[in-house]
Image (cartoon, rainbow, N blue to C red):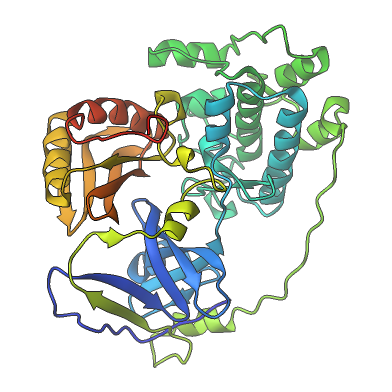
Length: 432
């Protein structure tokens, strides 16, 4: 579905206000995540009530980087409507369970191989496969996300190899680290093997605080499988985590492996009839396109967003509200929440005081704050978004969410952050 529009806004001249932004038939909600080139927001289709995720990219950057795809647009922005995946990250499931049973791990691994194989058949290589980038829908079907580091066919050099070193160190294939060129498909499969190991073991096969020691372990495939792995699972993992890309098993050989084939269902693909005429019209600068969506902002006075019972429940799993407030550090995901009996202004002041000593720059927008880390980590600078909601006149809920950067680094930040917030945090769901 592709639309496009004139940019307009109501009450654009007012200051200090907050409100809802509408783009075409979608009402934009809270930010789900953001990176260097784009922001992803929750949205609702006002005609059908369907929940979606909308990725927003500056049009200038799309043209500059030739990132034209199935989109809708205004004069200044590109809006890509995506499936809203509600089941969370596979990373969260490992964090809460410790490790998965072999049959469950195999099921997710089958989904992963199907998805990666499909990407490779289109000449797309992900290059940053890890549990954090694997989402689960409401039916437990695995979805691969975050293609920010992916490579396309035109990035392959004359030698038939990719040459950009990228990815998360613990999941990266040895040939990527060696910086001599690599086959994107074989490098992705190595990462899949690490993921399978993590699913079944609950920890990484290659781990060390010293990066050079870690790289040596990866180059030698220096790992061992725990005793609860079946012999057939061990054999497959060792064939995938072969440090030589030449002798490493291929995805097609994985699909034919006896351990992999247990309960396997081959994917069924539906060929959609896609026309790019409206996409071409969006990027036609010669005149006004009839496909441009309209951007409107409904302003209201500045105050914390009031959250009713239905919105509160929608942020939880089912009707169990205790999952809103994670107490143990191991259960903190890329987003968590706490309650406070202090005023919204007191909470904002305390967040600023707690974030600054940790090396974070704070920007305020009414009752939303953006914390930006000064140091660059595994996935760039850690960025934290916080928002204050009014649950009752004397009770606020504060959402703390990773907007950018590495989830594990967010965990470390949050642990130190809550020490500084101790005076304003009331009770978690488990304590109430």
